[in-house]
Amino acid sequence: MIPQPGSSLARLSPQRKFLPPTVPADPAGTTANLAPKGWNPAVDISEADDCYHIRMDLAGLRSEDAVVQVMGRIITVRGQRHMPPSLANERLLRGERIYGFFARSFLLPADANIREVTFDYQAGVMSVVITKIIPHRVDIGTSELRCGWAG
Image 1 (cartoon, rainbow, N blue to C red):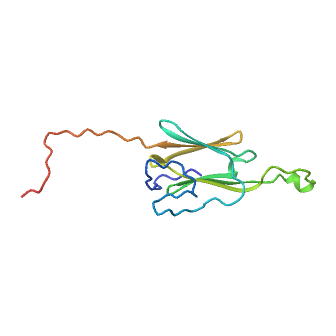
Image 2: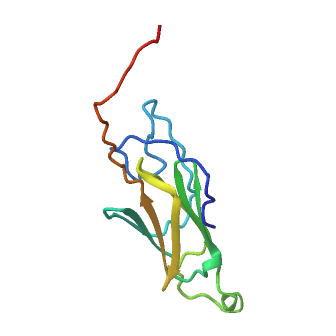
């Protein structure tokens, strides 16, 4: 699910980028662990000049098994890897793959533009792209600049 335009993103200080939700996000030190215990897919987060990339290994999932959600200042990828039905009729001799629910959440940096979040799922990798808000320079002229009360 792509975040809807108009959703809001709380501002973070520029020094904080993609902190996991268990890291204190405010001066009071309050935290919230948003991810349930269980499967934690591997993730790479990188930064380009104009955007951030989150790449998550989700081998064995169908695209409809995962959801990308932006809520406040947190982006979450959550979903479920289902056990193949064929295993119900077999005796498992060795099981190393993990099935079940997962959720990975990250605090977005202050310059992340949540109105421009896209994602793609190919070859078992979920790629999320979050564009940056590019500050614009405004030149202020000195002619006829007045301040004060008229009186």
